[in-house]
Amino acid sequence: MTGKGENILVAGLAAVASLVAAVFWFMASLVEVRPDIDVIVADMHRVSQLNAYAATAAAIAALCSLFLFVHGVRNRDRD
Image (cartoon, rainbow, N blue to C red; front, side, top):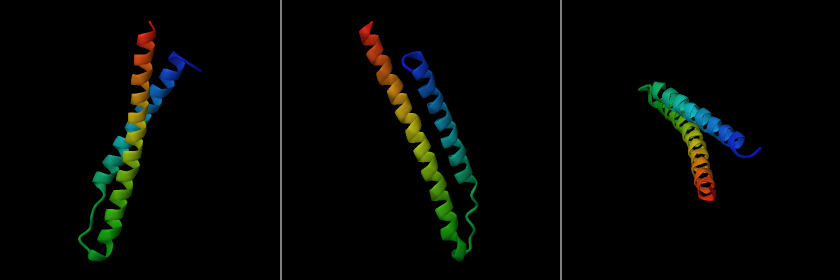
């Protein structure tokens, strides 16, 4: 698969990864950090874990966008 089909696949992956990042960051914002010292560490760990998943998805989206940009520049230079 090359050309337009490849670009559509990568663009779709970027869109899905962006949506996944947004969902994880939204979920992280909804975690209730309870004022009990015994559970605050677990709550903060949960927030950190969700943020890590979101950052990974955002990185995938950024790499897909970079691929599309470089691929587009290379194809433009060939024409």
